[in-house]
Length: 427
Image 1: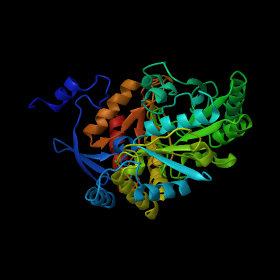
Image 2 (image 1 turned 60 degrees about the vertical axis):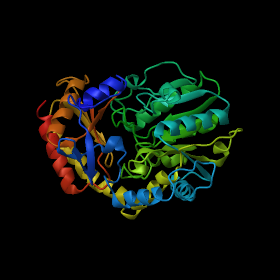
Image 3 (image 1 turned 45 degrees about the horizontal axis):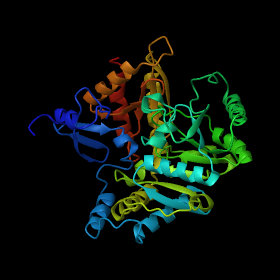
Image 4 (image 1 turned 90 degrees about the horizontal axis):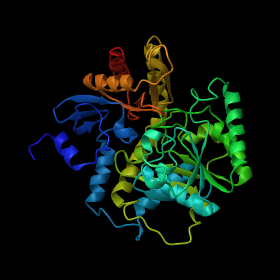
């Protein structure tokens, strides 16, 4: 037990369990937008436990709600009435924009997407799913089966037949040279052609902004145009809002609202930020879809009293303090600052994003080829400078992912941008 924690980790945990940094760090505590490691080093956190500590570390309103509920009862399961679960479901159903909405709680985004796939395939009587290229929807067997990102898809076996659609990546691929309007037209034509070669498709699942894929997104309105095609075929639209929900994009509370011209989605999945670190996921769906299952089901841990208390407190804080507005204002400043920094750096191909969700794509200077080595080097240099960020990307992990808590201040945005500038200039 006296061996270094990293050695103990490698001795008992899977080799495929990813760790950041050549010398991985143990985070021991946090406050606001900062965390500390076991050696006492302080970091400005621009990744929030993979976009999960959405509001702030050790947010008093959430920790108080968790402690008070834990002092009463921690667990009961969905076999019993749960006041906190009903109250949070009521609020989420109203916020979702889906008419006659029903909410089912899970413990993660993966499980939420599993449930959405179960509902869609049962409702439509089909195991055919449309997914986006470069997508990521979780690490379970069915979620891996629809993931369009080979780095996170360890098997081709799947209970689903998955067909991949163009459109999730604006700046790469066969349609990158087109205008936004032409890009949407080409992607819709591709979808129409694809449906001409299939039978009864159950649903399209799509992230409005692809998270693990490197914070890529289509032009606004693409999924609205897709929805018109889907509706003609009776195909359901699932929006995966695990990373884009709760106001993070600034312009909208949900990512789908950038594509809302043709109405809301049939199903919406959420997780991560709503619990501010607690394990909450879930699905919102039209009652007709949610109630289509003809067998009993429960969730042992989904909707637990403690996590629901955390979710209620956190959602109240987000709404009462207009954190969506803060994401729009401070996120807009941060992205413009990053664009100014990166404009003269040949290693940077693109700075993209929305609100407090920004990506910096790195390439080999003078080319369009991904540069995962540079991304790894910048990740290390940023940590050494006191900043934690993430990374991702499609064909190669060459995109820096920046997603601070939604309470980020202007001063902290400037501080993080300055650290990141120094890290980028080391490459």
